[in-house]
Amino acid sequence: MAEEPVNLANFAAPTIGRDTIQSGDVIEVSMVTDYARLSVTTTPVRVAEDGSVTVPLIGRVLVAGLRLQEAEQEIAAAGVARGVFLHPSVTVTMKQPRTNRITVVGAVKAPGVYDLPRGGSSVMAAIVAAGGLTNEAGTEVELRRTQPVGGASRAAPPASETGADAGAADRAQAGLMESVTLDLLAGAADPRACRDLDDGDVVHVVRRNVKPIYVLGLVKKPGEIPYPPNQEVRVLDALALAGGATNSIADDVTVIRRLPGEPRPVKIEVSLEAAKLGVENIQLAPGDTVVVEHTMASFALELLQTAFRIGVNVPFTLF
Image 1: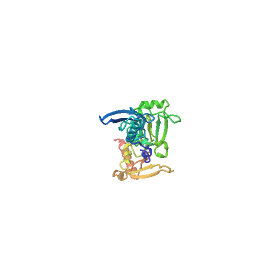
Image 2: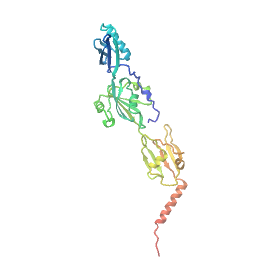
Image 3: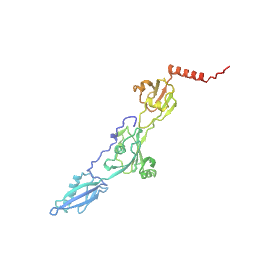
Image 4: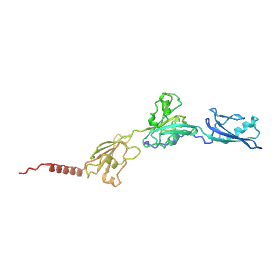
């Protein structure tokens, strides 16, 4: 998830109703023209790019942008105006709406290729279709568009990352795709964010660079620990990943955290005993440093243990 709340609604383009006809849709036109016999003719027709359909006997009628009921009235009126029918009864149904095949990759829960309605192919719709953002998602989304508007194109993600639609990657590598970078936090402030996606476009949610956690001091395996994706890490989790404490009575832990815009890091004091009781087992942030500190008691224990080991290892000579 991005470090700040992301409102995907800012990336929703104006949607078109399911019963609104668009170019590329296949509609079915049924007409009753002979009431004596109640003969019905049903014809599937595809809406042309100019928004028209060619209805048998009636001819070309503009229907794009009309709702199904409005298209029925338009076709019936055209039949009467052209002297073909006197009182036709027309029914228009949506047989196959045109869709866009959009490839969604990167920090989403289900990367893949999705068929989105032509009137609802927004960035938000694409991310939602892919299951939403993961905890690794950054604030940037790259759009690889099949219809270049200008500017240098950039290479698409490898086919192994997309998991599908190698054709889209091939088109990008051939220089046929324009790359546009959007900021999830900027949202609707960028007019490109709400532009409809086109067939073959690629939506790439860029993963953020998650800083590791550092565990130092009285632990068995001090050093860097990668911050695991899709889950939170608390103080006791970090100590477990570092092999546990080397001193059984060590209790003082300091969490060092750098805050954006602050010149000095903050220090958070934690008691291991309290953490084990669930009181101070605070959640760590990427980049935190966890130090298991020496106390007078832990230092004294180590001195006793060292002295005992030395005493046991001293050889005895019998006279």
